[in-house]
Length: 506
Image 1: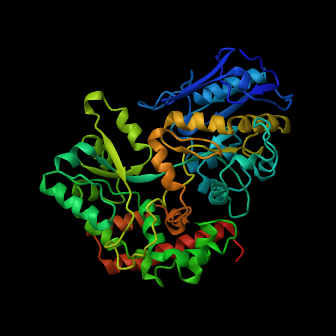
Image 2 (image 1 turned 90 degrees about the vertical axis):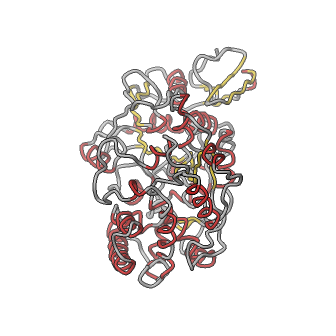
């Protein structure tokens, strides 16, 4: 065993032999002689005590933490904690978890009482523009400093994907999060049901998708059942309809954000008319096309009252897909893992596809490929450090220790180990490699393209109003004229709310 006090073997987990470093995480492993493991000199820490952390989906299986039934047993974060504790005797990392943690209401309530965990998972868009300012530490100054746990590192931000940094920057320029993973979405399909219907090739275009649905129907197979997350499809269709030239104009509002049209850009674009449905029919032009697709879907799921609560045990698109009662579901990169945990007799092979062309779905379709527009750094490796205002135990000495812990696990080796063990997302730090199952997804999501982030800002700020309106329209409960009128009202309210909360300077 390598003895570590303030000299730490990068990526070293507890329990390794003195001659070989072996890591086995989520189906991948590698071994290297311990002599080749590079060490770095870590900062001295005078503070002693317990650092609390809410790690969301990456919470390890540790004593005292009760995770929901079916939660995968993880150990990578615990291994990182043990290595850190070994380097700093007297410091303990305590993982905390409850079903209420991570909600906006929970964050606000705990912060007001000064009880936030020292380190918390928090959704980037919520930390940036929804939660009260000052409850999380702005990490910008520390991103420009070296991470002492990365050999040769001159600035911590140098190991972070520049696109992620551009996307996650708050409207005021602050960086509240260390963000190290990426989520993607796709149409997932049951390979057995496709084979039963004689479908050899997965659809690449909207027209082909509708044809696949017709073939499945003819063979007595329910094509799909889920009412997809409105925000996801809104991003795909809205960006496509606006087209590359218009999106480039939006990007120019915020220099340095590559192809990502962030919330600030979108608010300016709304005021200029590009994003205003009352002035630009392209914004809602895809709704009739979705209504056509849903004509093939399971009506029992689609006809649930938009504002109601599903009865206990009511079918959902995902539950019907898992039960092999629907051939297609639109979900995120976590879905294959959820199928794997089914009892062996109920498992089935799952494939995925994304559409390279939306031709036929709307009269406003452009040639811009936007199928991955809902991929982004909105997954589980999003960690913020609580300020003293939100965490009354956060003294200056403790903050140094907490920052050291966050820097320790936010290195490429730990990012890869933690993210890949769960297997639902793609690690994004420079030098990391995704799991085999996610490599094709990684290739797709990191290709240059224009993306609305956070998705469609009007959708993101409108709560459930737009999804409910969309559902009422596609299920035939309201007319197209009524839908357009209500959309305009909701959009204006959402934009006004964003401006009032974030005070952007135009």
